[in-house]
Image 1 (cartoon, rainbow, N blue to C red):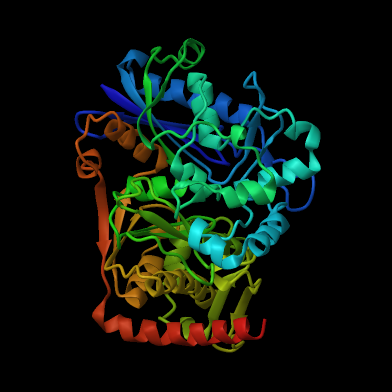
Image 2 (spheres, rainbow, N blue to C red):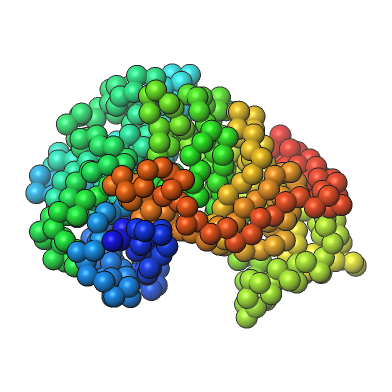
Length: 497
């Protein structure tokens, strides 16, 4: 007996097959083997063809069944996770009306800004827990105004994972978690937001039926079963956006627990047990996978744009193209804590919401031509990334999440012992590194949704901890001294913006 999880990313679609009795990964694969195309007809636009996601999902699904050497009838539940905030539009025949406007498309920013002011900032934050921003609701409003002939043909709008579920089952649905990530959900009234509908003029009949995050949402239809090699009637029992799913993959479900990622950009995701929000709108707040009206569970998501992208920029521009990232880290570790006086502010990948949308760019401070070299620059880059992540953790602390530990996948920047140790030293918290990913988490969550597992702890009991990194006592004082210097530079820059 197996469960399968699908992760619909903007680079690739991954499938993971998990054995039910022990929760271990039987096989995983992804398609395409190169990054999927992102269509940008204008500056700031980003679109993808949803049919490409489906095509790659079929390839990945067949690959894991083949690798595991099993028949599709042995798969008993399906979980789905996806790139958040995308918009897919379908007509009454379930045909896609236009390419999906995906998460990194910025065309709807002005729509969100106008809505924030028109509805009222206090009302938006107290009911939506966010400003409308550049999220799915604003993207739908953009289509309504700029492509009215398409808007008139819409039967339902979907998030990327809802589209995949529709292709699997022939049915449409959306969760409260999904509605909240699109900024459609009123947390105070626990319903679709009347404020958003009125302001944008969106008809309620465009919404799919609301379904639970866990439980039987739909079943595999005849066409999809043939295309994927699965059994007709196999249930879809879980779906969630990638960041809530990443947290769940690490068994982060309780108030005060936090998860993190640090790929091209980084995320710090903490769970809150009360309906609260950041009055300065530096944090995105969504329904976590286990949110209910009786027991609120909110995912406080703080994005740090300039993480791994700074590390890769250093690799390209310091002439280190042939070196591995492990070798680059080894080089950086030859420089002492504080990088011989160099500080790097790493926000060179766009405006940061945690900096209240101030676009500070990346800047390098304290260069001395006589006693520094590329080792110091490389260390300063990794320290700057860890300082930015810690700055995000401090914001979460200000709004009531004070963690004693952080969980993350053993991947990307968290493969660097320099980065991890620095972050632990300055934050004062232990960092637990696990061997998991989004597709594997979705597969295990599908088992919980099927009620095969009785609890989250049981569903994620197979999580393998790769390492646990705690602050080093004789390094923390120096690290915090360097962080305070970095923070002083950041404060000066933000005040002068």
